[in-house]
Length: 127
Image (cartoon, rainbow, N blue to C red; front, side, top):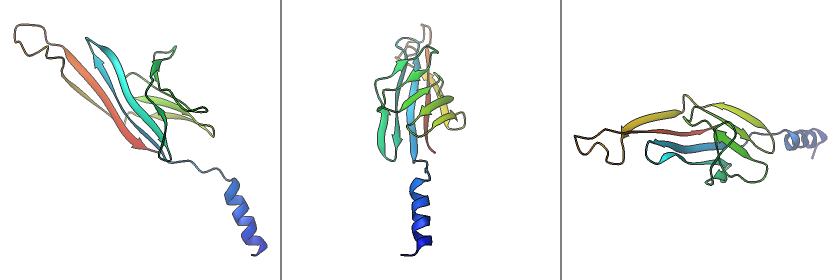
C-alpha cells in the first residue's frame, strides 16, 4: 500500500462524520388529561432517546436517553435541542412539525355541552 493511501485512510478515520439522526414523535395537548409526548430519537438506527419524558425547568419535554445524549423539545414541537457525545444541535422543527386540532374525549358528542378541542403536534424527519 502506498504512503498516500495510508495517509488518506488515516484522515478518514479521524474526521468526524455526523450520524444519521431520526426524530419521530407527537405531542398531545388534551384539556382533560394534560399534555403528553410519545417520541424517540435514533442515531444510526439505535433508539438513543425514547419514553420516560419529564418536563425541564424551562417547561420543555425531555426524553430519557442513553448516557451522553440529551434531547428536549418545546411543548408545541417547534424547536428541539440534542446533545450527543460528539456535538450539540439546536433544531428549528417548524417546517417538520404538523399540527391537527380535533374534538377529543367525546366531549362534542352531545350537542348541548361545551366542546373541548385537543391539539396534536407531530414530526418525523432525519438530519
